[in-house]
Amino acid sequence: MKFKQTFIRSLLVAVISITASQAATVLYSENFDQANGDFLATNNPEVNPNGVSNLESWGAVQTVSGNQLLSVTSSATPQSAHGGLRFGGTRFNWASGATGAAITAAGGFTVAFDWTESGNSGDRWIGWKVGTPDTDNTVINHATMDYSVLLSDTGNIQTFESGVTRGSVANGTVIGTTHTVLLTYLFSSFAVGSTVNTKVTVNGTDYLPQTFTWDEDNVMRMEFHANNQGELIDNLVIATVPEPSSAAMVLGGLGMLALLRRRKQG
Image 1 (tube, rainbow, N blue to C red):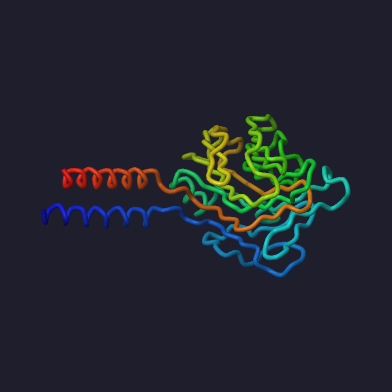
Image 2: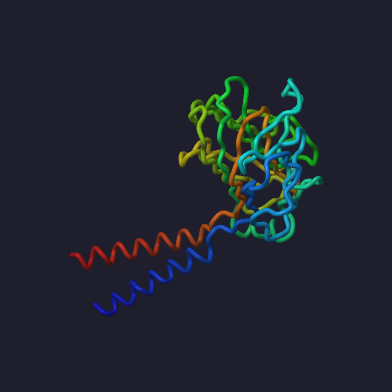
């Protein structure tokens, strides 16, 4: 009995240690906690260990309202006046340096944020684009984008690869409410042609599990995109995914604990 108790205690310590040491690493975090007004650029993100270029507006200058990013367009014809956020004037290469090494070592990255819809009717949406060129482009499904996710005020979720529609889900969100969004990208290399497994999670529900490939060799830029006014974004966090080996070891350890508990009860 003493042996079993000691083994279980040691196994619990090991599981906790694995979970703590190999959990996701936050690469960039921005909560938009600044005075109301134009969001030209942030000079003090909450987390930025590897010197990722700071967020700044592109296209229409975005704003901050109540410690949240408030989407803005610059004219009455929003299709020609979209805007969003990019990482630096020259868009940051997430495949480079310590950031790229951390992502590939972990097996991918996630993008998480809270999104409050404007509640207005019509063609209003936000998007997240990965594998973008280093230019401002107001088309969410442009052929130069490796992969884009669009979240619409109508409740639809859409994905695009190199300008081609990959998938669509109706009523993936509830109109006019706040949603927790998690975008997951799993891969082992930023090399051109490498496969990326991805999915969109909204309020804990997974949608559109798909794959796409990188179109540039060891270069990956990404950005936020909004096509109209009134969308609110908060608590943006970009992080590595937890290492698969740690998840397997944790599950294995918990399985062993369950087996020992059943034996004890028997």
